[in-house]
Image (cartoon, rainbow, N blue to C red):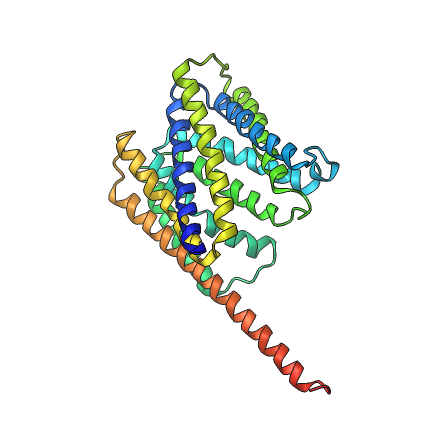
Length: 307
């Protein structure tokens, strides 16, 4: 039952994140992307600031504002800038399809920078997944859109963020880290306004409603994914993260009139297939290591004099 609930929460979180993306894309045609990031940062950051205060946590404890934590926030800011800009320029279904390569990039980064062991099977799956990305991006072909490179940049930045998260002191509250992440969007938005030369502008009631929708669904998506990872087994819930692509395709078709072509769908299929294989392979390796550890402990117990 816990796994079933976890699956439902993970699907709900992916739906919420897709709706947040929808509002960002819709608003990006009317107000600067940098301004959208600033408003998201202020709105969502305020929610987590209140949560931290209710829990009695210190948002500005010195240990939470140094080293790896600041690097993580910088990666978050860069990823947000690239992702939001890509949403404003590229079909939401294409953005979501390329973004599904994130788990593969994290696996590759863990092997290259954190010393994790990755065998030839998972390296092969990573290569297949990147082939799927190339099918969507299509460099050198008529359908190539240079703006898609922004999605790749977002994937690299978010992968760096997730890898850096593993190095963050476990004594630093997740609520505080989440507050920092959204606070970094404010700086990212200001930087984007400076880079593009755009000016922030007033918003009307309709735009304010969409902005509130983006903030609401972003916070709900974050909450749902935290609940899912706490109550469900990773092996049960992780495959359902790919439901975000399905939701994004539906939103793209219904709301934005998009029509993903066969090459994009085939590429997305390769990315999802390789990602699922990589995840299942990792789970198998963990179980094998656990069995070997138990067997070694048993043999030591049998060989001890007390036995």
